[in-house]
Length: 208
Image 1 (cartoon, one colour):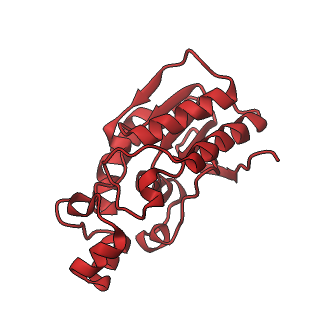
Image 2 (cartoon, one colour):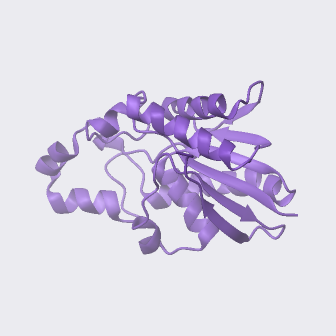
Image 3 (cartoon, one colour):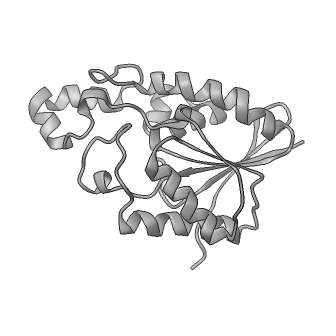
């Protein structure tokens, strides 16, 4: 049995636009973010993909993204599973700060280490390694069995929780995944075999 996994990053949020560290805070989507979410829904519908199961995080921007996608896909009356395990990386004391202000306070090099190292967390927050430690067990216990049973699963989440999943699915190193940008408005589709291994990967684009 081959299952299909669609990974979607939420559209641009108000804090993305303002260059603020967001983490577990709850800003809304911008107009651009709403358009990106709708474009993602159109891309999935255009590919003829109809998910069996829907997962998102406990944060508003990912939930709103999924709701907008479902509208574009013409899907209603579905059960959506929301779980904190799929939340964005917690930026701790950096949350709500402008990235430039954070550099002034702690220094360019230190902020770069917090943002781009695999296992060094910011004060009171999580590293990507910490994020993976909650995201991957949830994927392996709740989502992977569905894929192995041949189901089609859609996850709308965040840059770093998705990085954790992509790292495991594609077998990437910490350095490789830190260099990977997770684009908004471009769903990535993975075909997962009955053994849980990646068989095929496709990036979808919204129809013109």
